[in-house]
Amino acid sequence: MATAATPVSSLLSLLYRSYPSVISPDATEPDYFLASSKIFPLVTFNEGEEADIKQWLHTVDGLKTSLANAQKDVTEGILGQLNIHLATRTTLLGTKPSVADIAVYALLAPVVEKWTPEERTGEKGYHHIVRHTDFVQNGRLFSLQIPEEEKIAIDLNDVKFVPKPIDPKEEKERKKREKASAQTPNATPDSKPLVVGQAKADKAAKGQAQAGVEAADAPPKTNKKEKKEKAPKAPKPAPAPAAPPSPSLIDLRVGHILRAINHPNADSLYVSTIDCGDLPGSDNTSLDEETGKTVRTVCSGLNGLIPLEEMQGRKIVAVCNLKPVTMRGVKSCAMVLAASPRVAEGEDSHAGPVELVNPPADAPAGERISFEGWSEGQPEKQLNPKKKVWETFQPGFTTTGDREVAFDSSAVPSVHGQEGKPALGKLVAASGGICTVKSLTNATVR
Image (cartoon, rainbow, N blue to C red; front, side, top):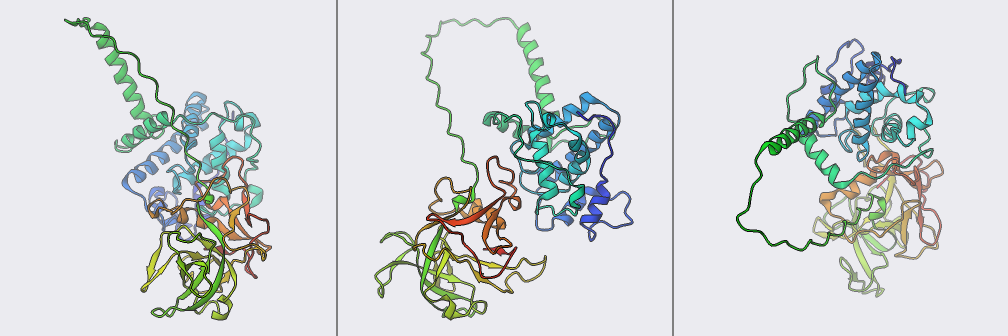
C-alpha cells in the first residue's frame, strides 16, 4: 500500500479550476468549509451535516500528515474507517455532495492510482474508497474540471473480491455514534486525526471496560427465591433485506392521447384524455363516454411549446404513479414525459424547445416501459412524495447522441456504481423497441 509521501493533487487548484466564481485565484488559505454552500448552492446542510464536513476536513488534514510522514498504522486506520463509512453511502454525507468529498479525492487520487488491483478490490482492499474516487472525478453532481488524461483509470467491473454486506444492526449503532460525535467540540490542531464517529466509539469501549472491572470486583448477588427457568424463546426471523433503490419504482407506461384541449383556466396548460391501459374502476381513472375506454385526465405545461394539433391521437410515455394534483381546478392523474435542452444555472428550464418522448410505434397503451438493467421488481402503486423517489431518479433521465432516452446512473448518487448495473440503460418497452425523441441530444427528460 502506498503510505509514503506521495504527490498530492492541490485541493485549492482543483477547486479554482472547477469553480472559478467561488474560489479566488489570489486565495492562499480559503475557508473550505464555507466553500461547500457556494459550490453547491442548491444543497442545504443541516447542523449535523455541517459538523460532519468540518470533521472530515480535519480528518483529511490528519491523513495528509500521516501519508507525508509514512505513518503506516495511522494511515491504514483512517483509510479503513473511511472505507467502512462509504460502504453504505455514495458521498461522505450520504447522498449530498460537499467540499469534503473533493478534499478526500484531491488527497487520495494519486494514492489510489498506485494501489495494486488487490489493494483496490481484493479481500482486504478499499473497494468503497475506489468507487468514491471514480464517482467524484466523473459524476455530474460535482462537475470537476479534470482532463481525461489526469483522471484515475478505474474499472468498476474489475472486482477481485466481493465484500460481505454491512450488518444492519452494526450500521445503525455506528450511525448513532457518528451523530453523537458530530456534537463534540472540534479537536485541536495537535490532536490525533479523527474519523467521524470514532472518538465516541473509543469512549464507549473504555466505559464498557471500566464497567466490566467494577462488576468483577462487586460481590455476587444472591436471590432469596429461585426463579423458575423460562423456556428459551424462538429466535425471530431475520428481516428481509431492503430492495436496493431503482428507477423501476417509477410506473412508466405507453399512453395513447385520445384528445387534448386547452385548459379552461390556465394559458400554459393542456388537458389531455389518455388511455394508459388501466382496468375499469382503477384509482385515478374515469370512463371515456366517447370511446368506452378507461382513461386518465392529465394536465401538462406544454401549451406554447408543442402545437395542440401534435397532441392529438398520438402515443406518449406517461408517469402513472405520481400523487395526483389539482391544477387550476382540474385533477391531473399522470404526467407526460418530454425532453428539453439542459440549461445553465439560473436560466429558464421551461423555455423550450420541448419534444415528447416517443414509445415504439407498435407498443400498445398500458405496456410497461423500463430502463435496460433497471427493470427488476414492480413499480410502487403510488409514490410517497416525502420519499422523493421521482426527484431522486429524474436527474438521470437523459437522451443520448442517437436521440434515445436512457438512464444515466452517474447523475444519481444513490445508485451510481451499484454492482451489476449498467452506467447507461436505454428506455425500452416490454415488447422491445427503444423510446426516442425527435431531435434533442444530451437533453434532460421529465
